[in-house]
Length: 164
Picture 1: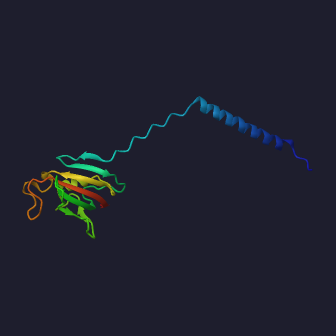
Picture 2 (picture 1 turned 120 degrees about the horizontal axis):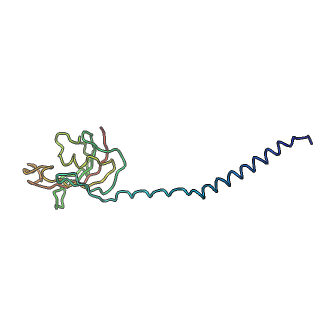
């Protein structure tokens, strides 16, 4: 057996003992200085919840989405069903259409209440919008349709897409 210098063996023994002592000191330090408790996460917003968008426009979120947020000026793709408040039969619906409805929020031909109600919703959101007459068809209603004068409209919408 060849001769080995003793310092190789001693350096390994010393390194192992230093490691054990270091670990013991680290454990003792942790016991003396406990880690602060992590604050509890705030609870997720409950669903359903109602948001007042002003001027009588109410939005009841029934399912939160997780996609991009709709803003005024964006083109949104919606599936919707529209009815007069307290009526059972829908007046208009995209159910059964091959192509969902696309509209530019705040654009011409879009009800102001619909733009206001959809603004801020994320893709994937299901919501019920209640639009007062002033933000829908107003005191005249919509001539040539089933929307009477001074009708409060209820839209059940699903946001399918958002494009700037």
